[in-house]
Image 1 (tube, rainbow, N blue to C red):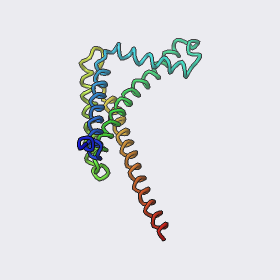
Image 2: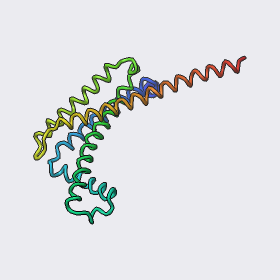
Image 3: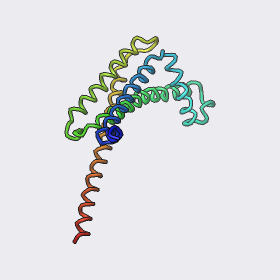
Image 4: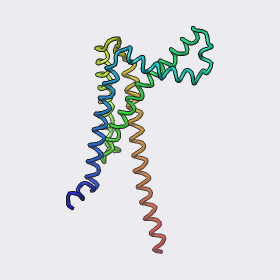
Length: 186
């Protein structure tokens, strides 16, 4: 009985949340590593499939366009798809890291954790780009590090804002209950 209470106590729930979020962070970092390990041909194949669907959605008459116009449109959309992929990969990592950070009570009072987390995101983005330098047909891009860092930071800030808003609403709700109880007692 004592063990069951330990796991369902507030501290137990926080511990379990931390372990799960840390696991998700590690799992997603391995996933990012896997995307970066894909050769240029493999990576292009994946992004080209997505690009084709978007181009046809945007321009249903795509096949009737001139070859020059098709290439121009495809290349523009392909660039956006690849860079959105970078942004999204790191935004997901930022959500997981942000969720982990928010299991610590003093997040609103400790900006250092946010700065350290963003530093972690940037460092991982740099190592990811260096890793791509060793993959056939791929090369490191400083622009990608910046895109990754922005995706990570925006997701991290979104998580923090979401949780802080939730905490404020919860706190205000508690005040409303106190106020309502005092009116009833009169």
